[in-house]
Amino acid sequence: MNSTTKCYLKKHIDSVHRKITHPCDFCQKTFSDKSYLKAHIDTYSDKSSLKKHMDAEHNGITYSCDFCGKKYKYQTQLNRHVKSLHYDITYKCKICRKTFGQKRNLKAHIYVAH
Image 1 (cartoon, helix red, strand yellow):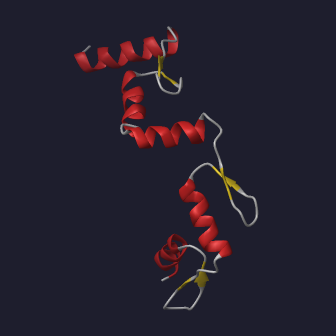
Image 2 (cartoon, rainbow, N blue to C red):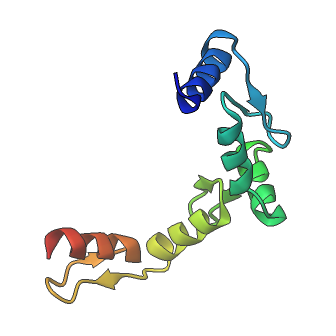
């Protein structure tokens, strides 16, 4: 058995049979492998990203639409909602003239339909 195989076998035994977990110090989510924990922490490496994550996922903070009351976890989601539904901003396909409320939907349409 080579060293790579031994390493994977040890990880398997630790996570599946010994139920060893690695908790995140910020949000208490647990991971079966240290590399998964590191990737999770790297996602929130700067303080503003970590704060946004904690507020949305663990502190119950939401952003509400003043027009219809719909709630979102992230401010960017609320902004997108307001622009596309309440400010009548539309994006028109130059090929077939179909309109979309969000720019990303127009891009997806062009990619798929044309």
